[in-house]
Image 1 (cartoon, protein in one colour):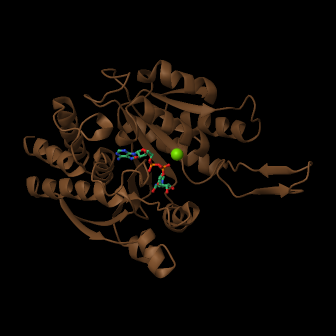
Image 2 (cartoon, rainbow, N blue to C red):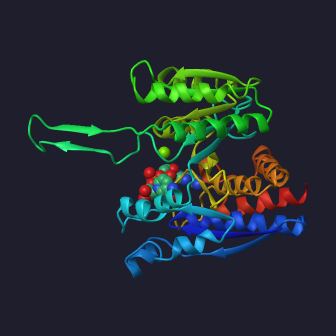
Length: 352
Ligand code: NAI
Ligand code: MG
């Protein structure tokens, strides 16, 4: 079946790394004619905002809805406030398309310089992406006075938590994993996190062959560094998942190696695939960004579209280039360009 992909390169290094991901996907199409992808690119970005006064047209979500998946680069530009770029482009897509799971693989690829190099670290973080600590419920009282108070409410719902937990256990089952680790803090956050614990435990009962480990977030953060090879699937609330993702990313080599998927598991709306990193204005325009996180995000997209086989081959090709070590972007200590890295990965793919 044909898959229609909406490509949103965005700002800064976004377009630079996205074009490498598309280059790799186009090659895959040639190598495997059963892969039918159609791309359409949309120039919604900060540049678009400066010209039109909005990040995307009014009918943008209607337009995007018709696609099977969205491949997104990054946004962020000094000329537009960050809350505008984020809240007018990324957030409407995540919210309207019910992308309530943020899936972030944490995998130590061979050949990546890291103090954990060579260890068998390979797990995913399932972050609840729609509620939790990131809510606009609350407010400030007595601004500027000594008595000033801020209240920030966390919204944990039975349904939202159950959906995240169910996704984590289903993922574990599908991928032959034996455990799910839940991040909690119910010893101190006694209302919302106790509901989280209750719901996760209830969902776990439906998966007797998968073990549920529940850890307080502070201890879990330490375990990420002490024994990252022990984890298989980690499920966490929005804030805990956000923090754990960056920690996980640092363990396996940094932002150049951190892909993500904003998933609508029911499939009634398109899901969106993007690297964890931003538009990197400090290196934008130089053609030296590492395209691996973006190419890996494209692999997650293929997996979501039912081609886990091709996603696996893409990761193998990336690893081969890293192990050979001849083509490395500056973040890896080399002097290769973004495009040279994309081409090296393409060549490795051709040999598969
Ligand atoms: P950033 O991720 O853009 O950059 C952080 C550091 O990592 C920079 O030194 C950058 O050069 C480096 N880096 C990032 N990706 C890299 C890559 N692929 N290869 C080599 N080096 C890379 O985060 P920062 O600086 O906090 O934000 C810059 C802009 O990006 C801001 O406007 C921010 O709002 C936006 N942003 C957008 C995101 C998105 O579109 N989802 C996510 C995060 C930030
Ligand atoms: Mg973050």
